Amino acid sequence: MDDAPNPYAVTTLQIDKPIVDREADSRWARWLVIIAIPLLITGSAAAVIDIESIVASGPIMLVYGAILVYLTYRLGGRRFRWFAWTCCTFPIAVFLIIFTLEWSPTDAQVPISVLCCVFALMVIAGILTTFAIARPPVSVADAGADTPTEPATP
Image (cartoon, rainbow, N blue to C red):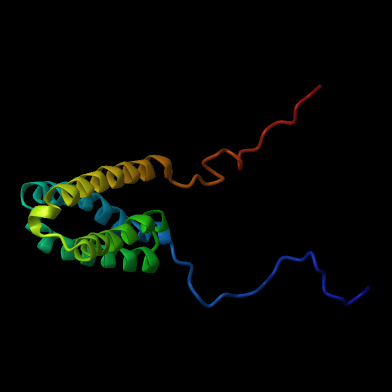
């Protein structure tokens, strides 16, 4: 017999790191995204009523987004990562628009309110689409692949 190793043999490599179930951990990110929907609606309504409310809602959204970015990278939930980054960049974009155009609160009332409402509608539509598209993984056993079947007879 030849003592050469079989290249087709099953590997016996032992991995020291435990396998982390990231989908189970992503439920935290999922709940934070669900909680964000009423916050988006409330923030947009507050911007329509009084534009100066974005002085408080902008930093809140930025911090909320930073927490979501951390959680989507640390615990999983990469399907919500786009939302987390959007929550971080939108307040910065609104600030830069107001700052570069040198708008007063009166000047910014209509365009920024409309921008906030459109943003909220688009993001909520994206979140709902993400929830609709994402399906839980189906195991091979659930798909019926492990059940033996009789061979077809001609």
